[in-house]
Amino acid sequence: MKKALPLVLKVLISTGLLTLLLIKANINLKTVWGVLTGVPYWVFPVVMMLALSVLLVKSARWRWLIGGACPLGQGEAFRYYLDSFALGVVTPGRLGEFFKTYQLYHLKKVSLQHSFVSVLSDRFFDLFILVWLGGVGLLHWLLWPSPSSIWWILAGVLLMGLLSVAVAVFLLSRLTPILKKWRVIGKLLVIIGVGITPLIRKKGLPAWGLSVVGYLLYFYSNYLILHACGVKLDFPGTCFLFSAVGLVLLLPISIAGMGTREATMILLLQSYHFADSDIIAASLFQFLVYFICCGALGMLSLLGGNYKIRALCEELQKLRVAFKKGDAV
Image 1 (tube, rainbow, N blue to C red):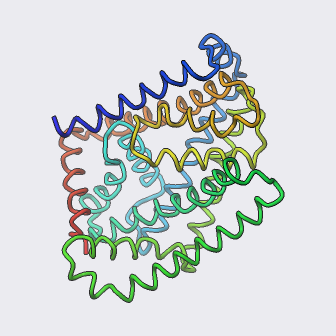
Image 2: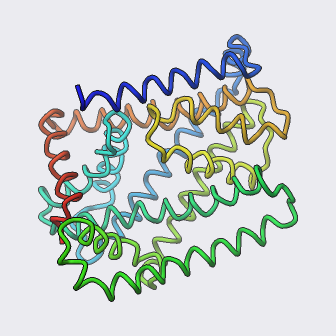
């Protein structure tokens, strides 16, 4: 019962938010359906290819961060990335991320620490970009709407972010001998310190390049979705919008972001006076591509790999517990 409680709460929150939007916002479900059915036929396959390209680029980044004699080919890394994405959609607690650790540690015999660190580093690049662009986007829309100052704020926050990472890496590296003596928190901090190091090292430059390419593809796919649904937001605005949405979706309070994604988009775009029904249609289109279709492809890949899903989830749970205990240090 206790294990099911978080899932039940997420379902209730998603349902409540969607119901509240239908009541409070100016949403007409017939209009939403009309917008979706009126999307040009070429948009879906193009956006779908862009979505898969995003995962392909991110898998190449993960493969680079593994470093050394990487035991994964690019095709293998892409498949594991797609599989982990699907597991992350259908399982609680972000078990999908531990699937990549599982593949490296159990099947490729990479050390547990290095397996954890490669996955952590990969996610830290995403987290940095989301906090940077999403934080500035929220600041811009909610507190400081002046368009002339946004680029200066963007540059300033980037420098401050990189400086903060550098300071954190320096302090954690100096405190490592002490932190390793702590049972849990200290060991976790050691792993985190190692994980964020590539963000400020020369060897992390290719990973930064791949991150930029991946996010440009991601933002452009969402730009096409918005315009196909009648939400004529410019490309920089699209980058800020979906970074802010991604930042909000880090909060584990809903099922696959349902409800929180739509509410955030409507809130941030209210000053543009776009129709709420068009915004909801764009959100549903994005959900269809990135969560339903990419998730389905990942699940088909998992089923094709002859995994016993229940047993696999149990192994991933063990890895998550090991990570929380700092057993990788």
